[in-house]
Image (cartoon, rainbow, N blue to C red; front, side):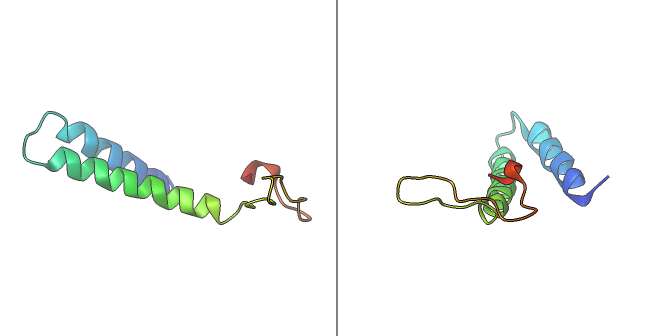
Length: 69
């Protein structure tokens, strides 16, 4: 299992385990999960073009995957 997949399972388990608690652990678990989501979004964002002034896509570079857009 990749370390990222392991991290996803760990974060999800922490959120599930903390549901219904009143000690702040649920909020902490959700915050950690969202921080990880934002890390993923930052990585994805670094691979995509912001486009031109009208938001059009730039041409693909050689060997660049369309799925990264």
